[in-house]
Length: 158
Image (cartoon, rainbow, N blue to C red; front, side, top):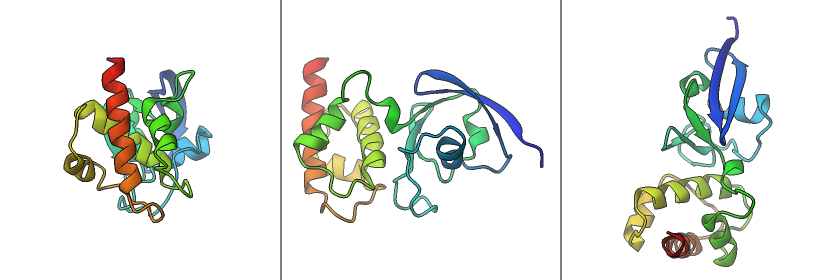
């Protein structure tokens, strides 16, 4: 099949790309656009390491066709920082919410979207909201603390 042209906003910049009709967004981001912050893990949507924002919604980019991003807006972990660390990134550092780092990009993306959806989540709401992103290293407690800390920072900035 012939490659198809798509155009979308990626981290605030307009992008044009040629993609295979059945190409997954994660592969377009990593292989075509060289944004390797979005990781490939299970490729079945279970682990969440490939989480990105697509049109204001957290999605697992290993189960989204690149064509679905056409004329949309995609934000990856590379788009979180705007000259300085995003509050979620800073909180993950301060609260030791990362260890090996493999899950971190997906965790950061899901956490920032969760806090946009619910700026003052309870611990239970954080656990529920982050449930689709798995970590094999941390035991999650510091991730929960990082999201709580980021929530407080973002509320102070507002």
